Length: 418
Ligand code: F0G
Image 1 (tube, rainbow, N blue to C red):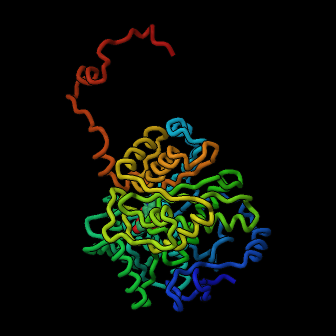
Image 2: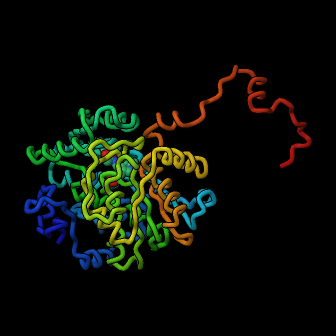
Image 3: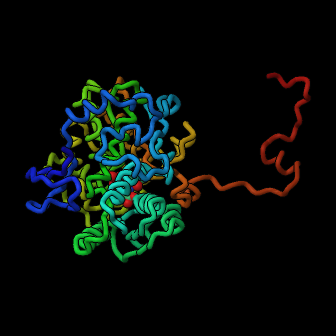
């Protein structure tokens, strides 16, 4: 039977109970399954012949009625083999999973298709989240698709414009609070516990992570049913690293892969409580009051899923690293220019972290590595414009353009070789 359970004390809750934190000890919840039931379902299912997408994995998901699924065709994103980047970095084998290809341009859509489907199953009419941008964009889109009211709380003046535009145009009630993401998250949690008619869809809601675990399944399927040696990804509120680890361990439990990857979390130097705890060998995190980084998506000082993330990193024998804003911006350009993949700064931190870990000898040359590029570069166009060479401006005359391009002496047609 599918149910929810506390990750600390094991207290069980019905799959349909609206509960965000354990009522006994206050810790996080997770969705639990009977894997023999899933195995039996898989034997009768045609899932292996379906196209790659979140819902190819519906037998692994806590959904009662597939006809109620709220979808915008999420998942099925490209896993790119990046040889040019390999040559630049010196690493063994590298793939980038480009989550910017999702309907609203980030991995959040994997969680929201499931979260909103659950909201519909539970007959909720209003959904809410706190967000550094992408969660709000995604929630607003899926709420619109399902005809639900959507409220989003964002830290004022600190989110990328592309994301704000999305939440606004999808018709969410956008509330900017004069405070941090961490404060906004505390407020939406308190609000949805007080007003039970408002359904919270931050990653504290374990159903979100059930959708996001499909990212791990897809990586294995794209690598011909094998896990990579290592997965490197940005960590903010720490839901995604927890979701991926759940996905990999489930595929392993079901006998679909025979090894597990080392989970490697990257945080920006000014917002790195999890990376610090890993480096210090600590079992607790020390929240950061005023997190700072250019990668606004991961400007988070008190990650709600820190315990799940520490567990994922330690159980998988992975690691964590911090990167500076400069390293993030350099990696963003390197990925765009060597592979044609334009990702937002938070996403580029995975490449920056990989570079740093490899150069310091913490990643071996023979590893097969997957970096997760979590969101599209156009989410935050201001940064890209600020950090790139400015366009040239010339008069609209052939001569001026030729001069600029150094093409002033025409080559006779006869000597042009192919
Ligand atoms: N990358 C991007 C592009 C993100 O938007 C986020 C989180 C992360 C990485 C980190 O993922 O929180 O699961 O560890 N963005 C959230 C938001 C916080 O509100 O959009 P995480």
